Image (cartoon, rainbow, N blue to C red; front, top):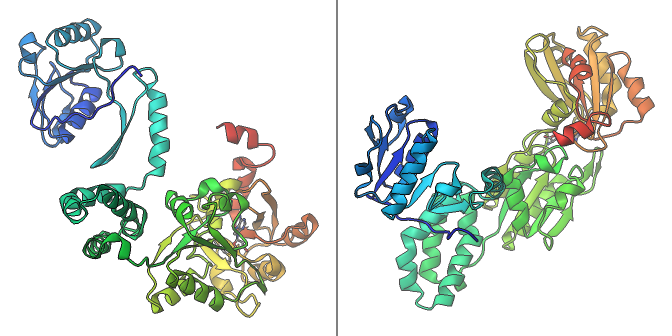
Length: 468
Ligand SMILES: C[S@@+](CC[C@H](N)C(=O)[O-])C[C@H]1O[C@@H](n2cnc3c(N)ncnc32)[C@H](O)[C@@H]1O
């Protein structure tokens, strides 16, 4: 290890930034965030300096050696190499920590890439050798850290002394904090319920961590159209800490692999007309599991609130006073659209888009055909493959030209993705010929033509897509 990692307390300390360009301003901004008194010196200073808050002291002139008097730390960001080297030498002579941007040889300290969830700050450095790699590593770590970490850090700061007074034994204290950061208090913060989280924290402090009963919770999570990389960060985090995952048929294997290994996984999948578990039993199952104190993830394909019966499930949770949250997912219409190169709206072809279901509760297909068969509109039909013949006939009957392009997309975003394209008269027989089955989505409208030009995902395009 070439550098000693440390966090400096620069509050009220005089710090100098030499340079007036964008990079100098970025460094000044970072120093200002820590409460340092910052002076910027350069003959010309970028006007964006006006947006810095608090404002640094600006001296529009060239650097003078006296500027280093009383300085705690200096950052040099000019494009004059000789000046950079001179200031570095002078700072070294005066034992002032100095950083010369992009020149590790002239630095006595380096500035890491950071993730700021103050008071939590994560710093990543490459000893000045590979800043881009450090930045990429930082992004990877950042993706795993919820924004709410900041709120939890502030909570810990606020109650630090109180917790010390309550638990004099260090092991007890550690266990208490673990229970806070891994349990329901943290869950509340992650779900944006800071007040409830803090209230629960105070209750825990009053009663002592050991006696706190753990309340269960249900997270209704959208699993997206299939590709595990389309999950949200929140979905992955919840999956990795769930006690139970209740999941649908549309959830791909790759997504289930992201769930905590020892989580109990309950399949309640449904094929259309073949319900494995009736909806009211699923609703009750969620209530029962939560009441047993379990952290439940109810994982649904796509988005829970788009033809996902998510509303019914949370209504039952509400009636039973079970805490819950809803995490949106990418709906399959978006997945199909992106992965097939079929924009759902387009200035030349479609000014609106309608999502409809092709499968009604009584197994009929009875839609508002007049509103669906509109020019300059894209109509996306979920669960419609069984009713394709009726759907296409009705669209023609209600005014859409028979030549209107139609795409049927099977298992979009997955390696098995298949797309069949035709028009309102031909699509049914083409789909039969190709043997497409559910889950498939129907896209009707002129935008379908764009697939020819914009399609990028699939057998031919995949190597390029992966590399890109
Ligand atoms: C019960 S609905 C659930 C929709 C889901 N909530 C959503 O937002 O995508 C199931 C239907 O979604 C569509 N679907 C879901 N995933 C799909 C995929 N990967 N490719 C094509 N269609 C999909 C199919 O029409 C399927 O019959």
